[in-house]
Length: 37
Image (cartoon, rainbow, N blue to C red; front, side):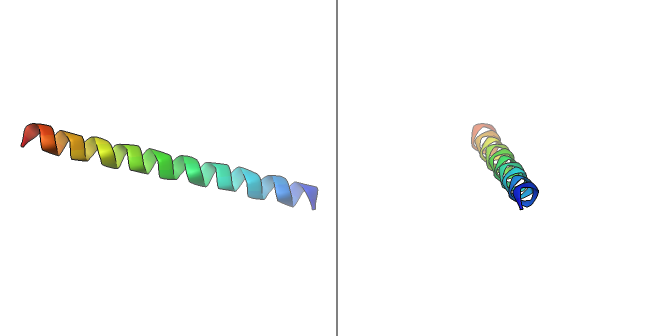
């Protein structure tokens, strides 16, 4: 049970990290579009 909890926590952390990376790259591309426009 303890191992499963740890695995869930790790996957959640990885997931939020992926979302943060996706959002930051998305914001960067919007910034680039606005700057070049």
